[in-house]
Amino acid sequence: MDFQKAEKSFKEYLKNYNVEDGSIALKIRHTYEVVRKSEYIANGLNLDKENIEVAKVIAILHDIGRFEQIKVFKEFNENKIEHAKFGVKVLFEDNLIRKFVEDRKYDEIIRKAIYNHNKFKIEDNLNDIELLHCKIIRDADKLDNFRVRQEDTMENMFPKIYNEKTINYESISPKVYEDFMRHQCIKLDDRKTMIDYWVCVIAFIFDLNFDISLQYVKEKNYIDILIDRIEYKNSDTKQKMEDMRICAKKYIENSCKMSKLSRTRRIFR
Image (tube, rainbow, N blue to C red; front, top):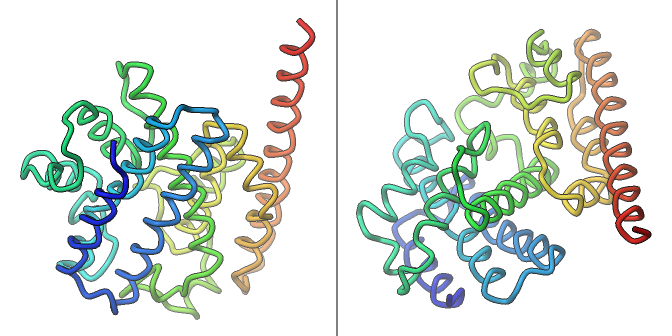
């Protein structure tokens, strides 16, 4: 597996797009950050060099469908084009994968990981190595979505639909709030407001697969940062966001304690 070749081909692929477009630039940086986070997770799991390279190649290709989505529709709209499915089509049906990876050995792992990286849950009947790489890219993608929400502009994150006055005064949909408080991720169809989209990202913590990922969120203080980024003018929304702050931080704290306890038990067996 040759990550440098994949990276070189990725840079060539980007010549088809306007890198000055804020949303395109956001996705380019996101891609490289997901590469870094995939490598971070893979190293933390003590994977061998080959699997670390596989994880990095998956990361650089995971959002390849996003660029055409933005170019055509000017927004991140999954109802018009589902970017993971489209990415798999571009890579494997149109055979673009050979520009990035010469060896066919890892095709199914790459295909399954990209296809599943944004799904509500990972599909069944994967083998161990396919499941491992699906979990790595899902965690890395979610971890960088926290960074994106911290650093990037609302206009780039929500092209065409962002309205500062609207997001500050919006309500949280009851189903979104209830699912969050039950430690559940938010389904796309349940998101009705921009605040729902924001809550959806914070709820990613409930689908992180590795202890190292939850610890990363805790160390970066992403829960407080994301909740505090918006000025809530709706009193009910403001109270519910505080409820979710407590819920999320308690979930992370308890998960980290359970993980530490589990490791201690393994040591003293």
